[in-house]
Length: 280
Ligand code: AMP
Image (cartoon, rainbow, N blue to C red; front, side):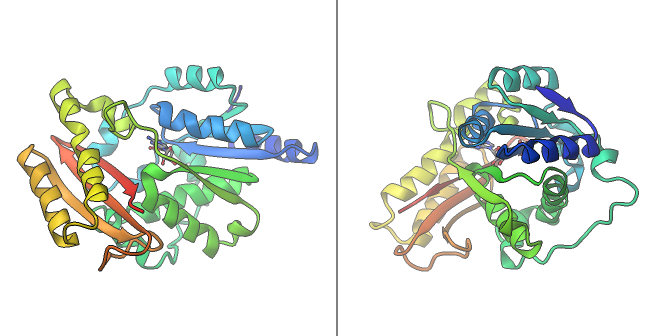
């Protein structure tokens, strides 16, 4: 695996691969890699000749300074895992490399999706995600691009970003399903920070989403959401939201028909977890 720290060198590498007729796939991450990330790498490997991963803890997307400061960094381990999964190249840029002096911060017209749910509770978060993703796509310009359904709203925001920047015409966005622990907890780098006690309770978020899926047609949407929130609060979570939303734009669902998704965000201690499941 070749490790690149400079954008220019990575772009040159990709151009060379493309000239040789190779198909290039790209998986961006913030590191502290787990099986969820590695399933993106494996999917990318299966469908491309060259798999490129990036690890960049993007300060622009953290609206909470402590969350950024406490974000787990396990780079040596990550490199080993990527090596084992036969990733071809890793991009490990510094903040200055990602956002050099001549980089102009853009405001992307993302529409309503930016302000719902995660966008409401983490103001500025998705503009920050887009700063990094747009820059990474500009550097890598892959044929295929892989994101996880675990961050469903992020997938939708990035799709919108790719539409408004015209990148969707040349880059295919692929969404890979969420990888879970045996008890249902969605794998996440933040799980590393859970205490033993918090870890035992952490799958409650998935259980509540699953309950909603099973009872979608026998209780009102309002009751399902309220009960889910109450149960999590009883277990000591601070709940930002449990929402039942239309899958195409994440607007709140008004009836149990159509393609729906249940989404949740809740904190245990100062660790904020998110999850979602498709309902039908
Ligand atoms: P992150 O390092 O958290 O920014 O995640 C990098 C990519 O991995 C994003 O596209 C995430 O949606 C995806 N990802 C994170 N956790 C999981 C998971 N449990 N299953 C599948 N994909 C995931």
